Image: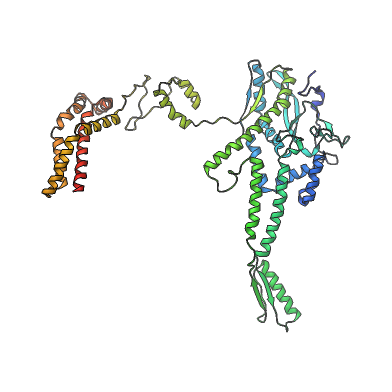
Length: 551
């Protein structure tokens, strides 16, 4: 004997029947009278009170209709449902779970109609519950073994169900034989999703219960707004006629005035006069109606999405990112509760019917993936490596989803300075010599400043005094003197740097040999003396400029 999650015995013969099909003339009719079209505050109060006592037909009809009549609610509730449907689905097993069970469940959720099941069950977010009937097919053979296989998940209209009158929490199928109480749902035959959006009776938890109030306010507001536009948007037309005008003339004038309301044109005799009067006393009514409409829509966005930044104008990217996290909490909760329902009403029946009762079952997980900022992460790898952190190449490759290269494949490498790719010879790349140019420049400047400070001060004072007395030699002449002084012994400090370069050129047999030799020398050349001379000359020239400017 097989039992469901509630301990009820399962009758396999009943699983091949169809229980919830609608039909004309039965209690599960596909046609319903409209409620939202004539909704007033008093009528809405009555509908909600009836639902609280167990009569849920009119409430579910309103919940269905406002998704067609209330544009903003349709948009945000669809966003909430589709967000759940886009969540990744995976199967999780423990060490005690049989591997073949995982393979079977993987194949089950990969069927095309499984995504339709997820969206159909998400309808419970609005109406507080959603039921899909499983159509079991016993003619499917997998690996030479006949299986119970769900060939279809048929969504059933919530208005074909009722709730028990004792707890208002048990969903029952309406039947002609038991119109008031309904019939208990057959085990292993139904997937019934009742998300916990708030505590209390499930029928009071659906978002439609809040949205229907917004719909009524928005509907009244829209009607009044249209009447306002009709009254104040078109100028009042007054036609005047003389006392001597005949009845026929009066009818012509009235006809012309009426025609101007829609056609904007008409003809009247010369003796008649038509005056157009613009309404000047609208007192900002347009902004009044618009403000109410925007207020209601924002409140509905908060109810359904938990935020307004992604649905209203005027939001910045930073604001949207902050509010997206709040909405993410709702999506995660929706996915978790939906997975619990599918595990209970589909995965367990599927495994029990085909593999027998298990101690540990595979679990379906529906949750958002953690998205890492790989760009920012890649910038941290070199810093961590330089700090001594040992990072596995395999771990990095897994993070980026980079597969292990096959033997003989060309590898992506860094380009040379001239942009040509470096051929991969299979040898590990040589680590380039660290570039300490910045440190050397700083050291040279500090040495120039400290070592020649007094000499430069004396020189600058002499230059300034000379400029005062003679006032003849230009600053450019002084700069030329500094240049000549420092270039006089250029060979002395350039020799150590140029000698390896000249040797490499002399021993090279081709231009490529020269390029390779220069690349090899790039990190080894001693540029300290050159940097020191240049820094000293620049410092003197800057001092000359400051001194002569003051003069």
